[in-house]
Length: 281
Image (cartoon, rainbow, N blue to C red; front, side, top):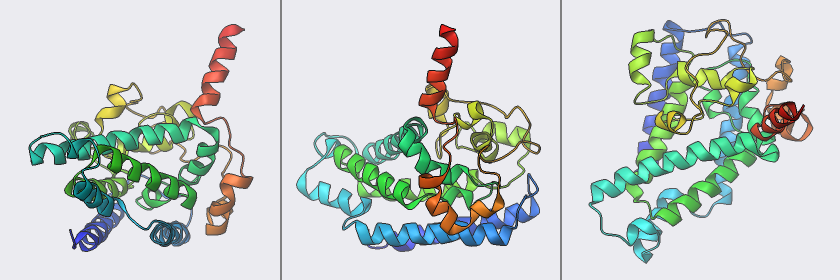
């Protein structure tokens, strides 16, 4: 596992270059603001996220998985299963946990304020898939570490999961035009750009759907799947109603957004309360 960093970096840069090139030749939508400006600020927050995680966490998921193995911690380290099944279960369960984490960040008002940084992007391309507030990244890492420890996930599972998560996050946020027939087949196996773009619509009930990042099954299984946006993929508005100013896409504005920006009516809890109130009337 000593080559973990090299493996992850190779996949990251390889997928980044491939998706970036595909966005040039097969774009789905025209961008609304300067690509250079967005990319500089989106990648700036990514760099900040990486530095903070490295500084704040003495052990990362792969290292924790090896530690759990040495000490017999976690479920999978205490039951007898074929190694290949342990690896497969580790990847699938971690992906399901990320799905529920995503739903939670749309449901708890304080967490939604952090997650707004991801949704406030006025365009939708591969850098959107990497753009998260540092506090959300820190909380997400804590959840991931807890899941690895509780499950006793094999280190190989963690590496495969991390590579898949980063790669599919860039792919399914790609500004890509995929033929409908191909997309229809692909979304049985992986979250596609058309499937996830719905999640970035300004329309609230569309924002609160299609939460999956990697495996597409959870949305269908738990009733959060939405096939297509009402406005169509080319004409739909991306982002949040309350953040339409391009100046808010600068790095320092993104960092301040959860603390000074309006949360809007997007979090699921608020929507449920409104629905209950309407039914009482």
